Length: 576
Image 1 (tube, one colour):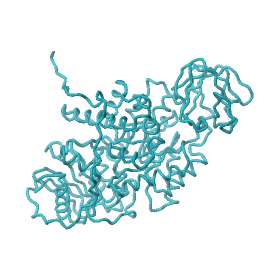
Image 2 (cartoon, rainbow, N blue to C red):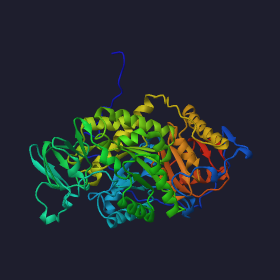
Image 3 (spheres, helix red, strand yellow):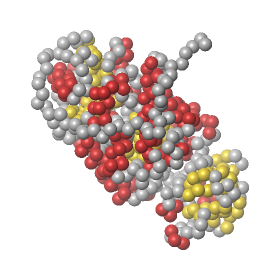
Image 4 (cartoon, rainbow, N blue to C red):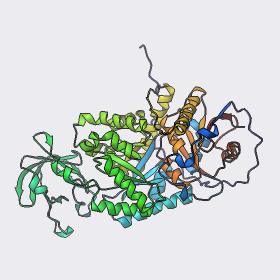
């Protein structure tokens, strides 16, 4: 053979009976400031500082999804126990760069279950407003906040709106229902009390449903996970024959096709943000969520309207708005939507119900690339490990799918039903974690060349210069084989620009603001810390080195590239 393939003879976590679980370690949340002072730093290899007339004022830098107004005054360094343990045991290169979003549901809503997900690698907890009451979601959000406060985590909260597309009801409280080949089911606009609902009858949220469908139409549930053919219409009832069996989930999306084409006229008339969504958004603002994901975005105007509304309702908050790419309309206005948003999610399940299946992979790759070019975080979602709702291991095709998303360097991967109602939420999370680590390590070992053409995203000349400083820092880290990049950021912008470059080494992002720390936890390759710091770069470094060395997270001789959006400088230095 002319070539060789690197492989491991050891047993893969995917083949073992028990997936690896991080131990519940005694947390070390805050480190006292009273540590011995270091001697003045030495071995600084290079340092560049902008002249005063070219420096960007902090107020002119875009704030990354949060406002410094929410600063928490805490002494020392905030770091979660999992990050601390990984750095102590395995060093810089062991850190996972791809972030993980977990949907919280009945299987994972208690404090201990949420903590288990955080220990297993969850970076963002998602609450889906399609299911449950606002009171239920409030309890989940507050448990996540409690976990962060007590255990030092930086788990962000994402609230996902329901949207106004056509969907089923909540199955009268049932977790799911199975439809078998040949069965007759009734879809109706009538509402029933749970005890009086006829067998195999599902209520649809759209009043014009029975008028719009025709006999012979094909009805797809949840992007084609179950298929029916309309055989008869009787008043408000649509009688359907199941042609492809599967699992029906509460409030699953419905689409119908006629003569091989999607029927979307009525969907186009429905608003992107429904009256219920606006009430849910008010709830999310009041609870201080970090992200709001908007379903079935059709245009950039929807995103702009929502961001203006959030600012009017809560001027001090900077809740990030994530555009879900899951419809033909969103693809037609893709760049404008992503430009207006604070990030995007490729919701492949619903997207696959509106475009040919074979186009979904190329659309995913396009969205991931475009988000990186525009410096927006991107999440790949839907059906990553669908089989693990019922089974303890994934299919090999699912592992390959996850590997592809990691190889594309998406910022995050998302579990939906797998973590919300699946039988094995922690094992599904362990799969994403282990596959991400393996593919990331393989890319580094094979020295994949990053050929991404990243255009300038800043507008003013000083901001453009600082953007180039961040680009240069990433290139320096690669050429000089730095162990890590340290960035001191009050807005989060410089950290996001470093993440955008996908450097070989991890990026330690130090910010004085708790909310910015949480939001940075969605960005590829960033390890966010909460740390109060001054405008004196040397003082900040001495203090940071002291705090991290006291925790055993760095060692003397480690080679660090340092960037600061306070002094707008770049420096290369060895830890003394």
